[in-house]
Amino acid sequence: MILLFAGMQSSLAMVYDREMGSMRVLLVSPLPRWYLLVSRLLAAVLVAALQVYVFLGIAWFWQVRPPLPGYLTVFPALLMAGLMLGSLGLLLSSVIRQLENFAGVMNFVIFPMFFASSALYPLWRMREASWLLWQICSFNPFSHAVELIRFALYSQLSLQDLLLTAGWTVLFLGLAVFGYDPGKGFVAATGKGE
Image 1 (spheres, helix red, strand yellow):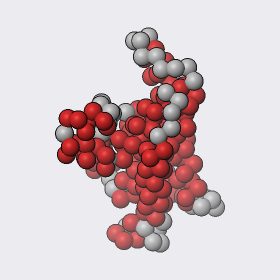
Image 2: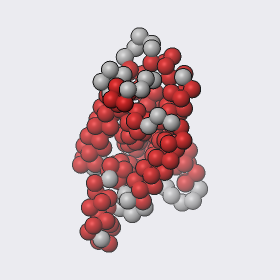
Image 3: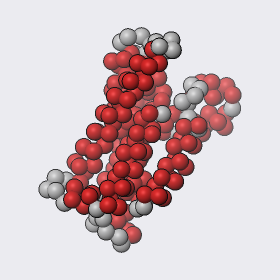
Image 4: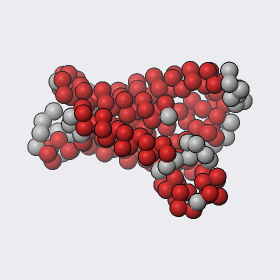
């Protein structure tokens, strides 16, 4: 949940920066746009990963104690999941122009992604409960990020979830970079400048 909310909130800041005009200053730098977007995304993911570790530290006092090596093996999974969720937020911020609209869309993205995922119950439990719900959860990219983190916390690798999370990340990030390109992206399609 922390990664999901952090990914959306960092993109909310992108919409705010575009509305206030400070993004224009950033995007006219000599660095490529994809580099600027990925750098901003990585910064947000690292902050979110630190927040996850604080949460795991607090959970320790409530008897949620995964094996100690899991705290190290979960870090790459947190980065991959954070990149995917942040890329989704970047994609949304490339399409939505106003802060108020983005805040509303955030709710329509966050809550269905969370509740129709394996965040509350593992996928195998979903399959036992309802085949349709299991299909919905299996298609949800957030489910695979959750499963990747869940397995990594116990020093296991779920290759399928890793590949699916990486695939969704590439897709979302590619579309976001395309969306922020003023010559080809969504800005050019709508005819509105940065």
